[in-house]
Each structure stands twice: as structure tokens, then as C-alpha cells.
Image (cartoon, rainbow, N blue to C red; front, side, top):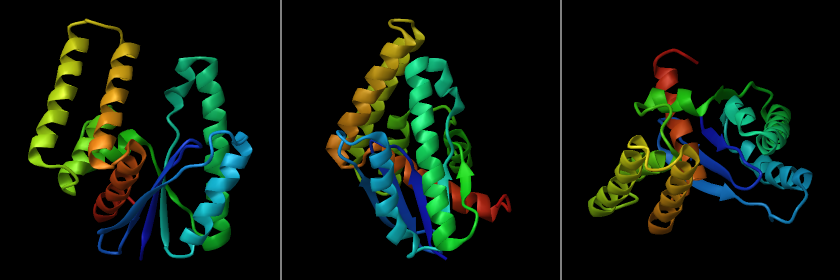
Length: 204
């Protein structure tokens, strides 16, 4: 058994491949040209994944975060595009492997591996970077200090939630620059790990 874990996005899809024993074999991103029409981005991602589906036996996909609707019209459009991408990827998987893929929402996957379900992308990057030693102890301490500082300021109402999220996104970008671990790949790796935890617990 080999597993492929997918953090889907038309901007940048994170992919992680695991061995039967749960070891991370490979991680990478699929990044379509941002000038492409959304449908062509979907085609690009599916075309890149199809040969990879032949190399594995199991698939886990991050479910869509339905709270996207709370962010207004832009969020609804993003949800619609992501839903189409997810459908196209699942359809391709079914045609290649003819088995049902597993879907976990990010909050489910995070809880399974032992971190806060509502944590930010930067937190996931730090968690994965620490486990796989993609960063030094000094770097990890710096990343965590940056996150703690922003969370502390937000709790003291120094700025709004939207500003806090922007700051956390900036930290995520900084972590990627230091470790070459983007949030999409970190999420894919964590998703794959949650699959093996769930399997051991008899949940899948």
C-alpha cells in the first residue's frame, strides 16, 4: 500500500506520498500558471496527478472548509472553484483506481495528529518542520516566538482578526523561505499522517 495525500488548491496543490509503513517518501507542489482560466488550472492539476495515481493504492484529500461562505462573495467563488477541483480530482482517482478516496477536513486531520484543530497554517509548518527536521532548533524557536507574539497581540485586541490572519500568512511565507516547506506541502504531509493514525484507531 502506498498513500497519496492532497491539499487541493487551484493556486498551489500540495502533494505528499507515503510508504505502506507510513514513511514520507516524497512531497511536492503542483503550481499552475496563475494566468490560466480556473478550468484550465483544474485540468493542469488533474493531468499532473493522474500518473501519480498509478503509483499508489490509497488516496486522502483535504475536505472543503465550509466556513468559506462567511467571507462573502469572494469566498463563495473560491469555494465553487475548489469544489470543482475536488470533484475533478476525485473523478480522476476513481477512473484510475476505482476505489473510494478518504476525505478529512483540516480540523479533523490536525486533531488526529495531536495539534489544535483551529491552528493556523504556520503552526502546521512548524509542527512538520520539527518532526522531519526541516529546520534547526534555533529556527523553530524563532518561528514559534513569531507566532506567539502575533497570537498574544491578537488576544490583547491590538488588531482585528483579519489583520492577525494577514500577519500569520506573512509568518507562513517566512517559514517557507527559511525551510522550503510551503503551507500546502505541510498540510498534505499532516493529512497523510492523520490517515495512518485513523487507520490504527480503526476509523478508516
